[in-house]
Length: 74
Image (tube, rainbow, N blue to C red):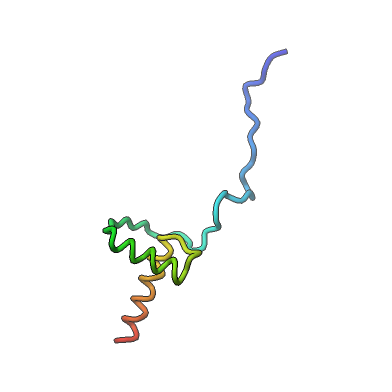
């Protein structure tokens, strides 16, 4: 009997992707370099105020807080 050269293909349509769901939608990637003292302060804030957030989520939230504070001063 001759072996088939085709590979069983599993449809990915309708299947969930691994990992957490996307909650922020498509956005623009911004890469930044941070000094250790800045990251230490971010990590301290994150541990105290929002331990479930990842570091990038914590940085985004801190930026939002800063921008909201700036709007209040205007």
